[in-house]
Image (cartoon, rainbow, N blue to C red; front, side, top):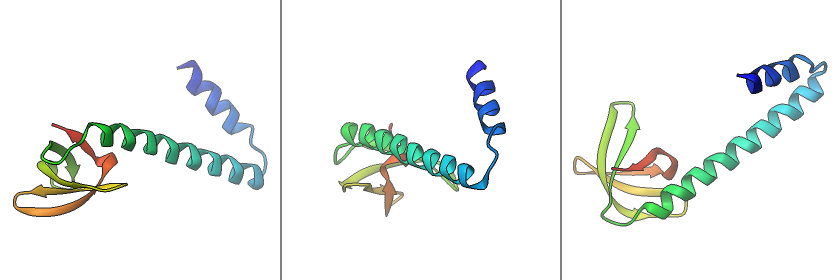
Amino acid sequence: MIKSILIIDAIESIDSLELMSEVIELINIKQRHLRAIKAQGVKSSLFVGAKVKLNSKNGVEYGEVTKINRAKALVRIDGQLWNCPLGMLEVA
């Protein structure tokens, strides 16, 4: 709770568009970094044949990994192959 108040105060103290742009860029860099860490964690626990679950537009779906690439995995869901980002997958 205290951290979020400090963050809000820091945001409120921004007084120029240039500074705001820098802050947004830094946040985007941090977001990419956190996504990469999550994807690496998922990748280390995946293997061909692993049962996985993912959240899609249709809700939670389950499938089986058929191939693992650098940033995505090929997943068989209901007989169809889908190229899914590693960050979307969880080992079921």
